[in-house]
Length: 168
Image 1 (spheres, rainbow, N blue to C red):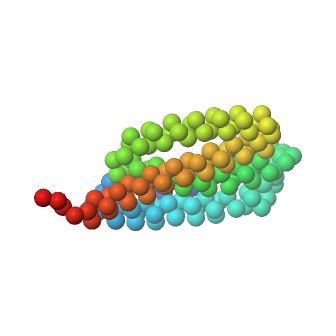
Image 2: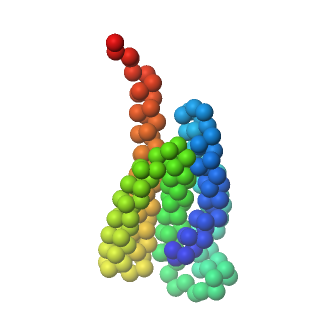
Image 3: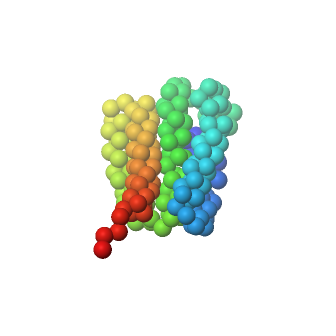
């Protein structure tokens, strides 16, 4: 299931690869934020176009593409949904790097790694493949929330600094 998520995500994240450059070249924070939002929308749409068929026909497509028989498609469906959030977060990470916030990126990776290890181990122990898929979904939801929370916080603070009165 995670192999399908990885394959779909790799294809959908192609536009995000250029987001570092697009973000870095913007002359205003508003334009950088706008570029990030548009590129992320393209990434999400690309993932949905590729991923929705795996939600509808997971067993059939997995057999055709990977030559593997899937007994229970539920873990795969959860991983495909998790992949959408992973792609949205991945696009945001590219933006954070592009606007010079690599330290935040490193911190986010540490946090997400901890959530992933705990979630995947606990999920697998409690529910096998389905539990692991739930752990992957929790990991990617956390990843997405942390990344876009960091982006929102950065732009909110920047806006507050611009609008703050100058005291003399």
